[in-house]
Length: 122
Image (cartoon, rainbow, N blue to C red; front, side, top):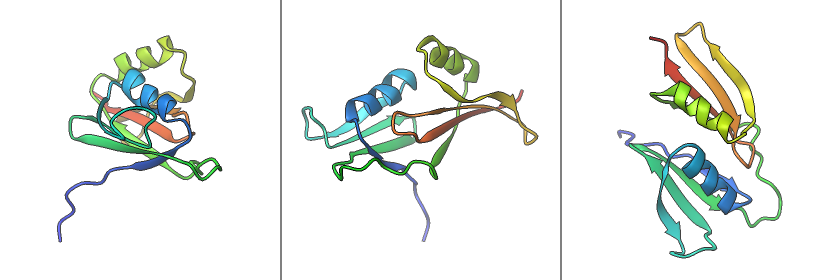
């Protein structure tokens, strides 16, 4: 067996807010929606080989996002941080340099999933 890919599959309360976060703030492209027209119950967003699935949570209770985080390595961390700040998105973990050679900051998406952005120190 060889693992080909791992794709986060997030349960979301507000599909429009989640799509706006991943598309507008992070620059990901919407690649799949079900159904084809809103209101969507499923969507996929991607950037390069990275992909995230979004599923509308119709269970009536918010998803438990506390134990889930995504670690996203990027090029252009400073530009992304500037875009996040310009849009007034709350920073969950301030920009910092780690002992393992990365610069990182984090935000929470609309459902509370922590998204940590990192770039290798040059």
